[in-house]
Image (cartoon, rainbow, N blue to C red; front, side):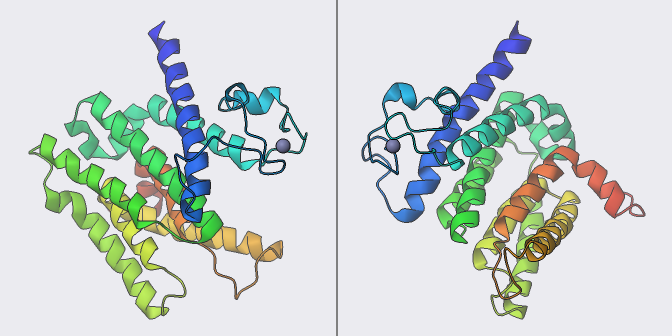
Length: 267
Ligand SMILES: [Zn+2]
């Protein structure tokens, strides 16, 4: 029974957190009070009743249209809710694989490590959406991640701060070098801080695969955007989303990537 109930619970929790992230990523960068008022239809401004505001389900039974004005509800709501719910479930079901890719997580009780992973997942979805929509990585979000990492050190004497933060420090330094070399065109300082967090989380040697993969994904996305004429060479493309995607790929397949990218190095 537990084998079915727990994953369903995790999925639904993800949908609820996703619903919060949807509101947060919309309001926070626009400086709209998070606690002010209930959600309303952005077309007809009607307040949305609680029964029409249930994560994922409302979108399905309203068939994606506002009950009042019948205008389409922006796709970002169900997209963010479904992505958060799916990632929560995926992280939970793949926890054994993740623990083998990120070995320091084994130092803690499973529940603790899973909660840390789900917190990190939530933070990164917010980073992804806001960077995509506003080309900015909020310091506050990166701080939540870094403080959570720092917090784990109080619970294990076998994880040293030096070992935990050195990979991220070097990753950040590398992006900082690119930031200075390109005079801030290619990399922002937000990217440097995000690399510090994600690099520390993944540790050696996966941090190297993580950086490499971020650039590969960025290059592929750049080619697609240029080919479909959605961007031209002068446009800035946010780098944060590529790092977030790369981070999750390394979380799930880190050991495999290390073998593919560096077959001659024996980790
Ligand atoms: Zn409406």
